[in-house]
Length: 234
Ligand code: NDP
Image (cartoon, rainbow, N blue to C red):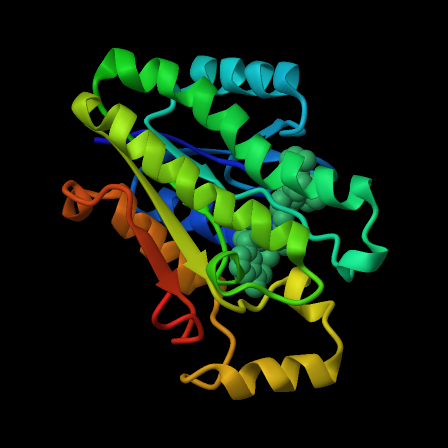
C-alpha cells in the first residue's frame, strides 16, 4: 500500500534522489521546495523550514493531497563555511536554524499524525562531519551532530508508538554542495575516502528507502554512515 511521504529540500540533490526512489517504490511523495519550480512528477509544496507557519501550511497541503505524513525525510540543509575566528553569529545561528531547528519544526509537525496512527518513519539527513568534525564548518558540524542527539531522544520518546527515528550520515556526495568545493580540496577528500570516490545521490536514496521500509522495522536511533568508509570508527 502506498504511504504518504514528505521529503524536505526535495527540489534537487540528495532530497530529489530520495523522493524519486521512494516514489519508484510506490509511495505518494511530496517534496518541499523553497525557490524555483517543483520537480516534475512529484507533489511540490513551497516551504521555508525556518518558518513554523510555512511548515504548518505545507503539511496541511500534503495532508489534503495524500493524507497525513507517514514517512518524513528531513533533508533540507545549508552550509555557511568559515573559520571560527571569522564566523559571524548569523553564519552560526542561520545554519543551526535551518539544519537542526528546521528538522525539529518538521518532525514536531509530522509526529502529530504519526502518534494518532501509531506508526511512522522519520529519517534525518546528517553528515559524516557531524561526528568527525571539519575545520571551517563548526556551525554545520554542530548542527549535524545535534541531529544525532535529537533523533535518539525521539527514538526513545516515540518507540512505544511504533515510530522509528534514524539518521543517515552521508560522506561526500556528488551534488551542487560538493561541486562548489575547490579542485584541490576535492582531490584531498577523495584521498581520505577508503572507496576513493564521492558517493552518488542514489546511494543515499537507497539507504533511506531501506530505513523507511519493512526491512528496517526493528531499527531505531541508529546512525547509518553512507560515506565510503570516511568516518569509520565514529
Ligand atoms: P543541495 O544544496 O543540493 O540542496 C539543499 C536542499 O535544501 C535544496 O532543495 C534547498 O532548497 C533546501 N533548503 C535549504 N534551505 C532551506 C530552507 N530554509 N527551507 C527549505 N528548504 C531549504 O544539498 P544536498 O542535496 O547536497 O544536501 C542535502 C542534505 O544532505 C543536506 O542536509 C546536507 O547537509 C546533507 N549532506 C550533503 C552532503 C553532500 O556531499 N552533498 C554530505 C553530507 C550531508 P532550494 O533549492 O530552494 O535552495
